[in-house]
Length: 235
Image 1 (spheres, rainbow, N blue to C red):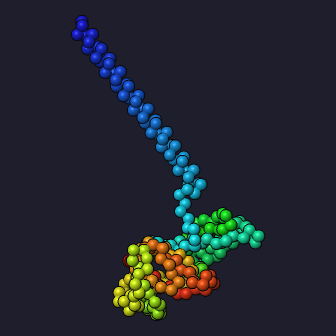
Image 2: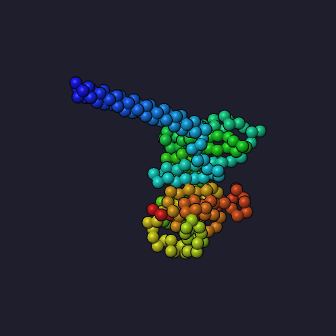
Image 3: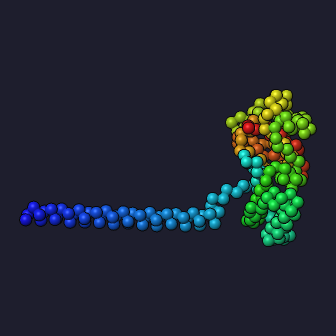
């Protein structure tokens, strides 16, 4: 009888321990679900507040590896002459007219906001040719050999770029030795962001901020004046 009673107590205790483990697992699962929901809510709030929005502080042209181009324009906003809705409507009309001729995916308006006396507008282009044509900007993207064939004479003074800074001067002949190198030629005052390291570039009117970014601006601060800039970068 005593042995039977002990066996019964052992079985009862085992069942009780299993129930406790099951209850603990359910509580942990519930806590995990609640935590996941809380994290999702926080992420959504941060998204709508723009916490993860890394907008450029200055006008920036980004050339992506997939061939698309993103332009972030940052300019002064004068509320005495127009408002945000008018500006957005005008931009949408211009893009719609262009896309009607060149395809619905050629240019997209991704974001427009007004804050602290400035307007930020982000547009995306299917490729560099649409950016050049839509904005009336002299621009070429391809290889050094293709740039030569297109008529660019490489008459600038060039410098090397090393460790994210300008280095020694380099001759145009040196650059032309390898016609397979990638090159951007552009006539615009803007910051250019490449997803590749810059190797050489025009010395005049350029400031290197890091290995993949260069700002083009005129020394006298005249924003209406532009100069042709060559940027040679890694494949």
